[in-house]
Length: 65
Image 1 (cartoon, helix red, strand yellow):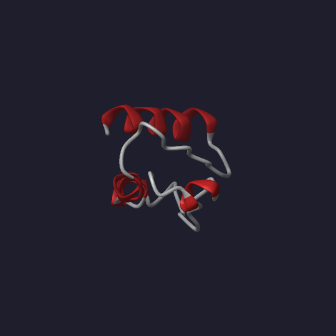
Image 2 (image 1 turned 90 degrees about the vertical axis):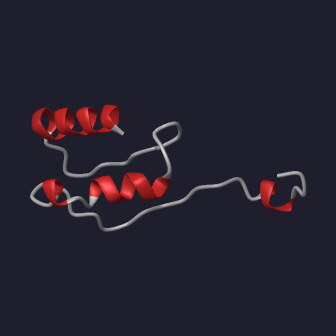
């Protein structure tokens, strides 16, 4: 969404990071975030090489989840 784009633009312009780790809870669906990060406008600044998913394996066994 727009708030993430504004934050990302500010970070890229001011911080010039070598790497980004984004914990996306509340930012939107992971596919939307990946679409944003791989958009042509970010090609000069972002080279997406990996995505990670961290979960609690105990929840895999919970039939209520």
